[in-house]
Image 1 (spheres, one colour):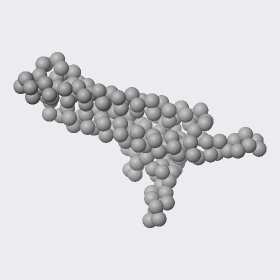
Image 2 (tube, helix red, strand yellow):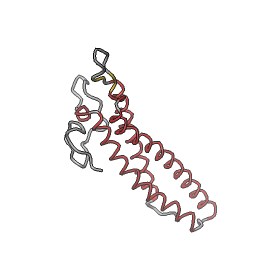
Image 3 (cartoon, one colour):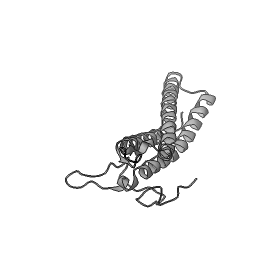
Length: 164
C-alpha cells in the first residue's frame, strides 16, 4: 500500500506553491504599477525596472514556475501509482519508494520556497504588505494576511537585512 502520508505531503507542496504564486503575482503587479524617482525632469519609473527589485522578485518567480511543474509531475506519478495499485493489488517497491521520496523532498522544497517567496513579496511591497483592509475595502495589496514566521519589520528590505 502506498504510504498514507504521501497525499498530505503532496497537498502541502501544492498549497505552498499556490501561496507563492498568489503572493508573487500581487507583488509583481504592484511593483509594475508603483512609480518612484526617475531621470531628472523625466517621469517616475516603475520600481520593477530597478535591478535590485528584479533580483528580489524574479528568482522567486522562476523557482515558483519550476516547483509548479514539479508538483504537477508528482501528482501525475502518484495518480498512476494509485491506479496500478488498484489494478494489481500491489505496487512495485521501487516505484512506491520513488513517489514517497519525491513527495517528502518536494514538500520540504516547496514549503521553504513558499515562505521565502512570500517574504520577498512583502519586502518588495514595503509596508503595504501588512496593510489590513479597512471597512471601506481600501487597503494595500497583501500577499498574505498573517505575518511571516521570521519576524521582519513591516517596512521593507532596507530596514531589515534579509538572511542569506
